[in-house]
Length: 461
Image (cartoon, rainbow, N blue to C red; front, side, top):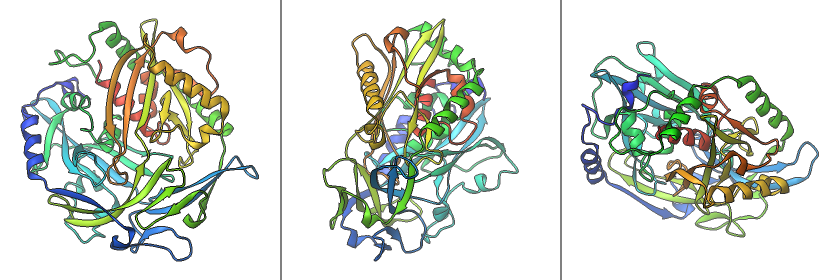
């Protein structure tokens, strides 16, 4: 990745705010809640109670039971989204005047807080780009289906929220082209520096764009940023040194493998009707205590999608989430405190997550059942907001609006003195930025929150 990709201006899109304002004015997008009976093509199975589309595609809402292990105690059960399709999350890249640009899309999703968010060039499941919906073709998808004439910069399967999805994977791709690409009205070319700048705007860069861009290797910092994000030169230097440090990967992957062997909950698919503590009304599936999340129905009308109107279910978290990363400077190099995060929907059971992770306002049923782990999460949460903590990044960002209703997470990077952290259990480990970046070339290592925070950290140097 060229250093020039981090410049904060573009000869192609020099006035992004004006372009964005035009997209907000031009796009028509209306979302309203509807009862399940008004979901066209969706229905509850008469025997299992699972909510699915009549085509058998898109996704379904099923039941999941979690036990402490084979023959172990029942921990809990819950609804979960099951999407077998592996979506393409793809961004086109192209050089203009020696600067690498990325083709970004102003895309409306039914669960977005603010309608439009900046998204990848292509964000589509096979159900969509093979036109099961009988709508228009997905723009630019052919660049990612047939890459033989282009340069593939990133191509890796990555997970999504393990508390809400069952073994969900998406294909994260960046493809560099050298030919002329026609730019449709809802698309524009931006440098990585421009995108990094926009990552400081709440709910602007969507989750799918963040996960793809997190796979871009750290480059050199912009020469003269318009608005310096961190005034502390020593911190920026520590980030750069940390990005160059990739040794110790064998020990890091061994630590994660050991955690996966230690945390082996038994995951069983069950009928949705058999999930404990949840009930279905005309308008939603919800927990009896109003906690965790609910499943609801929406009807959508839009002017700039392959299909102009549709209905679908969405998962609505009970509260806002928190993803907090504790960092510390040691001998001039930044270290990041990560955690072996256990979620029922991960393919391997455990992925590397941030120091603190509240999913939709709670740390998660599995963590709550592990008393010492819950105490440790509470201790680090307190540290994130302690008076002596130096907050380096603090922005609310939205999660995927195609499946979640108004899901938002406060992403926080907080610098502390190493001694303030204290003793750590086996589920926590200090790592470098370079180590995490190296793991992003492979699947099922970093969870979506850790990938987002790694991308946010790139904006600070």
